[in-house]
Image 1: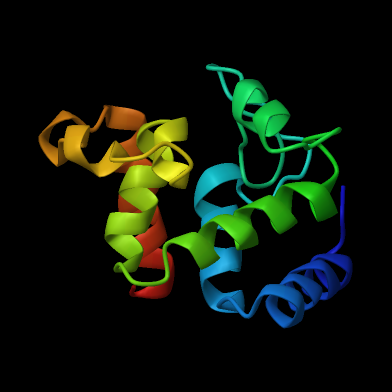
Image 2: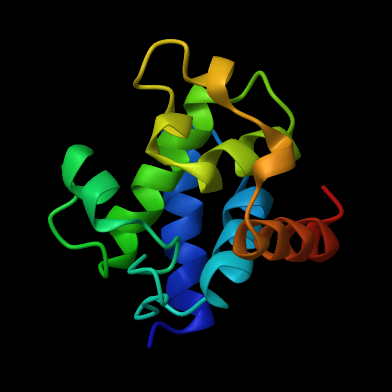
Length: 132
């Protein structure tokens, strides 16, 4: 498992490279995987940021369990959503791959009332962790 020091370096690099919030990256990793780069959820999401295999493949991730790749994709996704609030971004990110903004008009079909329990728990944990 990665040490706190090595995670600091990975998050710091992503922050410098993509200009995103290190606080949000860390909060997402904590809420999604408990900062465990080897985590695999019951629905198949993998790595520290819990990428679904289909999403990882579509985004060119060769190994979702590599923290650097997983974190880089999360940071790049945050760039695409910098105009919305952290709650809105994380809700959309967790609902489905369309949330990444690669599919035109994905937001038209997003219904926050239909967020599943797992996503709701992740969002609650995220906001509690970082007061976002």
